[in-house]
Image (tube, rainbow, N blue to C red; front, side, top):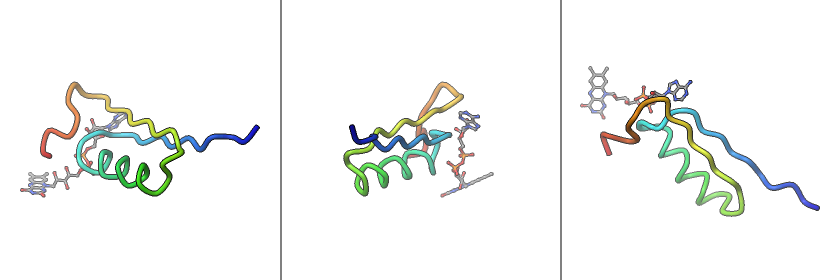
Length: 45
Ligand SMILES: Cc1cc2nc3c(=O)[nH]c(=O)nc-3n(C[C@H](O)[C@H](O)[C@H](O)COP(=O)(O)OP(=O)(O)OC[C@H]3O[C@@H](n4cnc5c(N)ncnc54)[C@H](O)[C@@H]3O)c2cc1C
């Protein structure tokens, strides 16, 4: 069975969601997980 690409992104402020959306576009088959230690994600977007 082929292994599924796992992408883990640490931080959900500005760079994190940008990286997540880029990863999703470039590797739509991958599992993309973003971790944010705070209560809010991408508050500036
Ligand atoms: C005073 C000031 C004013 C600014 N003004 C502007 C402006 O007007 N316009 C502009 O475009 N930019 C501005 N910037 C720059 C902008 O804030 C940064 O470029 C941008 O926030 C960088 O985003 P980032 O995602 O790289 O990092 P950060 O915003 O630092 O986000 C990192 C995230 O990672 C999380 N994190 C860290 N460690 C962990 C962990 N171990 N597990 C899970 N999550 C974790 C944090 O909680 C945080 O949410 C300003 C910066 C400063 C300091």
